Length: 295
Image 1 (cartoon, helix red, strand yellow):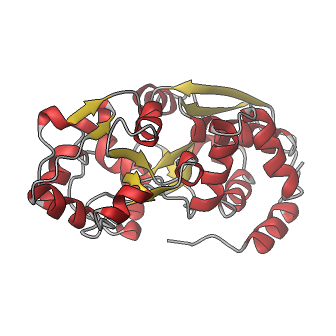
Image 2: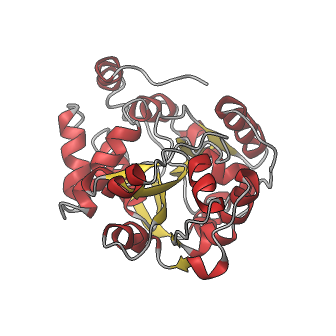
């Protein structure tokens, strides 16, 4: 895996890879229907527009619909997660290292005409969070600690969305890996956007979330260490149709340079500005690009 450059080096590369005005048709940028993806889609549109591309945005789509749209040629480019392609699209269930996961999805999706560019350091994998004070009181820092507490008789209630409840890399197999069970009556299913607020309001004791969720630092929550490395890597990566890259030869270098600017902390801050500080997606994306002299 080629790891991202430093922010300074990445910005230099971005500037060097600026306007290459020999593009072909309009590039359609897609995005899923949650904050991080909305930010990335808008950021990519602004970024490419500043480089002379004709760009159209189709964001706010469901995961499966978006993937099908890219395979069908209706979407040219969007940011995907290695774990999602590995498990949901390619049905690979074996445990792989981050590098192995990236290389596997890159090879499998190449057969479908999709090119995985350089992965960012943003890994939006699943995670479990607790209120900092309760985690400290119960001496819970990892999922193994959580399992030990529940097996010792502590009844802790989990907030989960419907997807995590049923996924092959979700609740049931995680419990099997760690050797514990919340129990059906101790699992509350809800929209993903409500899991952390419910935790903060003490309606539940544990909440499923994702590693780059902007509400985590804002709410003083503790993310439990996945000490048995159950959750697969979800490296955030630009994925482009091969035909689109052929028609736009500078696009790969430009998107790789943008990918090099992203990591967990960066994405969490950007997400928090939308979800917590209530800034608009467009303003947050624009400010990030301006910060790196990309507009």
